Image 1 (cartoon, rainbow, N blue to C red):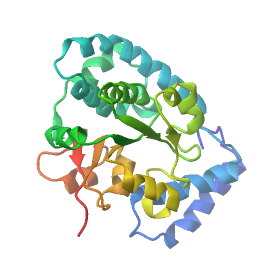
Image 2 (cartoon, one colour; image 1 turned 120 degrees about the horizontal axis):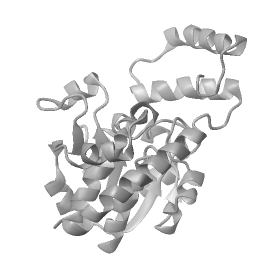
Image 3 (cartoon, rainbow, N blue to C red; image 1 turned 30 degrees about the horizontal axis):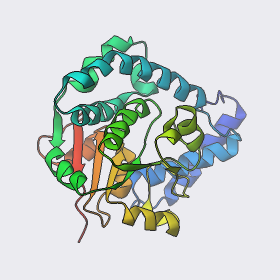
Length: 271
């Protein structure tokens, strides 16, 4: 509500509505699904389509400056795809809660230097080598600058990349019009799963989308909410790329993973 500048009786009414709604929650659902329902209730009551629109624009401009500082490194490394993936994972932290007043130069080493807490890159390479059609599920608007690095590296290897964005505005995540504005539509098709949510609850997506998801040779999933909603689905060629942003997820991932860890993790389908 702060983003929508709502502080009066309407704000109090929304809070009361949420308080009344919370006791009926199905706690077996993922945190991302519960948060989605909460946000959508707020959006509908406020009547504001995209409260984070200006934030997304600021984040993309900021990330572009960080990208300009880091881009020369791509030409100097033996495996630019790996560096691009590391930066895309580190870029998961470029959002309104992290930016504050930091200069772009502060973020450069913070994004690419830390090691990965879980590193399944060799597994990723094996799957990539036999893949042609790739699904790339985007997350927030800031990190999309580095997602473009990864997509370009994949295309340079002869891969067809389809970008998956959110159906409607939610938090600072990329939607179709954002993808067009930053030129991702020039790199390949841009689609959405036909469900308004944080993350990607596949069981709620359209049958058409689920079919395309199953048919993709490789799926790259960005962000913790996508991990929360997709972990365990029936697809071995699914890889999660995100920064761990809560202790519960850190504990779930196991020894050696902590708050702030970078993760490149192959999905393990539930039996």
